[in-house]
Length: 419
Image (cartoon, one colour):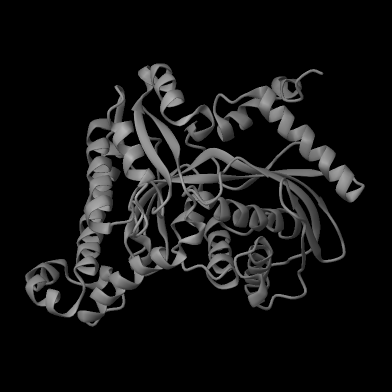
């Protein structure tokens, strides 16, 4: 059968898909489309009428700074959650993701359900709740979804899913008027309250905004600026092993310990603490707070400076300065933030993966990615050496455990044509 994508080339639709996926595998994408359409027809006895895509994200700089009102550099990427959708008039959302049981959520009920904690149903209900609470419309739909954003590994599979739901409701029921930050806030409410996982807004903003973004959370709210793409570097994500989805307590301890340092100075978050005063009082701090909390606070202050260095490097298209900041960030996450492996873990999959990556010719920078403790390492490589790098990655990690990704132009969006 001919490729369904190539049939659209003369209408310019292929260029839109390249903005989502870069130079993607036509046959693999065709397979996803055809499988989803067939699944929708089988599950719901109707053909889908619209298509949506919500990306994963990478954190370039700003590891664990957003929850203390810090600064971040992030980008949406070509890994995505793809979904075919049909609007219904019964107010019920029914969604079938490949490999998972059916989700059924009545949008008339927007209460928090504790029995739904840590489930996808909670994420759907939470997004719908935010929309209703803020005067936006909600309603029912059927959907089938497939994700290439691997779960529990730091590229934000949950936020990708949340923003998918937000964009479907935006387009089906609100004529596309819900802006990117509102959609991010809806996703954040869903994850932090309905799913019951403490989190910042970095993931949701990166996926909602699309492209490369600098975001300042100085007052607790995101203040984004769009930047040009990452200069002359390929991005590699390595699934180093492990799943951070069961490590919520260790993830939450980073925020609580940073907040404890801020409280010592009479502040809620570290961003409001005078940096010089913090350093001046380091000897006294050791008598009141744990050494780990102090080290994590030092990481916070230094990481904000690295974000600014990275921002200037991108604006000046200076890849060398960017990778210097990224490598310094990785070392800080390992030594100060201490989120590169869980407490008591002897496997240490992320540190070992990072050390392997750093020793590959052509890789300029490597570090822990995202929340940490398990899951993903990220590397930035010379584009001209990427083919040679692939062979080494095949041997080191296995072809199924690394992804060479593109920075994606658009955030969560409706695909403006049918297949």
